[in-house]
Image (cartoon, rainbow, N blue to C red; front, side, top):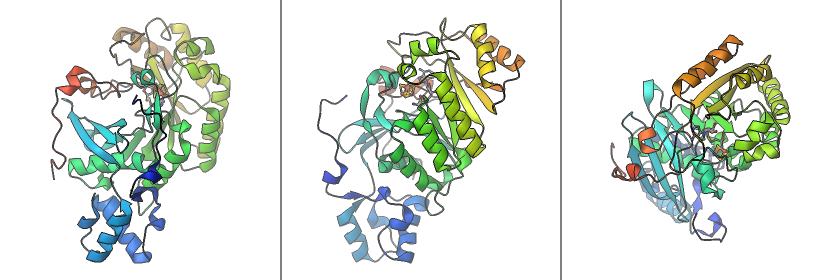
Length: 363
Ligand code: SAH
Ligand code: SF4
């Protein structure tokens, strides 16, 4: 992480972040607000000068007071499979990442909620980085906007968002909720809540708060082990939050929202891939409207764990299905540019051999 110990104070920058405002809080009276919201979220412009149906004086006044972009630099690393990893240099010089996945007519972005992550899961490259800082709501939203701009599409063409990038969203929930409200807002990105998935390592108070907010978004829980003993070996927060407490919170989330919860499970050789663990997992999930997503481990240099070979993954999946648990295996994409789960934050020589596209490519 940067050696800069001063806290980031967005208010100390000369211009204020306009993406922090809800659409109804935007500057101007009724019609003006709607015009500005349309330019920001439907047209995806990144300069006030481009808001051509606003009077010139107003555009100049807006640019004096507000900023749109939260990034000093945007770099893109295209993968052979069509996904694109984006590396963002924030205005304080820190870095965060996102991934664009344009497959099967479903344009999806994977967004980060932090620089690094304080949770320190042993199998995760972001965890190995440590904690940088929380991202602001504007920085979370602007990842999507900058990707759309770079891709030459309207931000509203991106129909799916997964909060599965760097960081633990439930440890930055105020900012994450603010960003999600603009994603959902009809004058914002106008997204359907079913198409937003928040993935968490399992912070019970965060899950309860999310249930109370009742935004209708999907929850994915990174369980990775059905027993506390195993879980503590790979997920440090498991010492604070036992599985029973997390499951109680998940049941409350389901009771309130009626949204099926996804359980993520990365298979690690000799740690969480035994048949007894598959059976224990199915007992844990019985009666819940649950779905298990098995994730093959994405290796990174220096990782202290190894992935379960493919045959073992399929056997684990079979055991779960035999117990009646809906299960899928997610062979992830973007591995060649370090854009797969848990690989964000990596600076592999391979990723660096890709030349960043010019910022205005594709427009
Ligand atoms: N902090 C949140 C969201 C980001 S991680 C969370 O932990 O849920 C998104 C998913 O990728 C999580 O399920 C995480 O456990 C998983 N993951 C992290 N590193 C991985 C790796 N190297 N291989 C496979 N999955 C990984
Ligand atoms: Fe943080 Fe999630 Fe990585 Fe764990 S898996 S270190 S919670 S980003």
